[in-house]
Figure 1: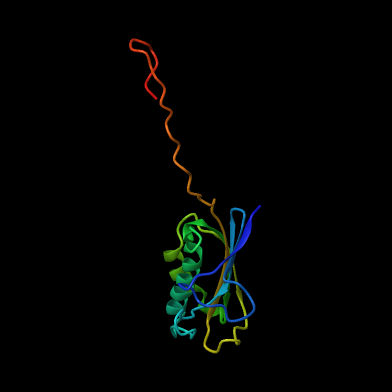
Figure 2: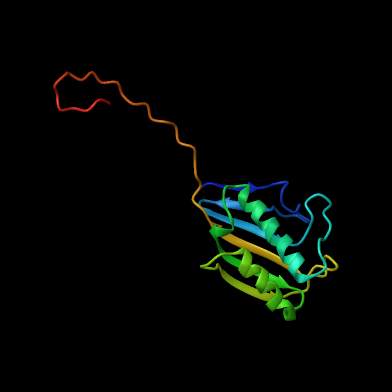
Length: 152
């Protein structure tokens, strides 16, 4: 099974000693990411709705860097700084992910490493790596007139 790192400039840059994601066979593992601007590395949004949108945008960018999408996500781990924000976060989540929804765990966590951060999400996706196949050249057989063979 092949494995390799996934890195993209379209997603939030890692804020520590970790990779944005990894592919191992047909599985993609996306590291915990938050509502971080890919250009400035700073937090985006003050509301849970804004931060959830940006966090999912960052996850989507990492998945797309290796040919996958949010539709391929099978498991989500979400961390909220305040579990009373669940209903508002869930409204955005339900709009961004499609049915059947991924399996999910949402917990309350101390996200104090980034002041003002309300959410962090990591996920696992399943996506068969699409490789570019070489075109098969048709053989040029000579066919006798009147035979039942089709031309190749």
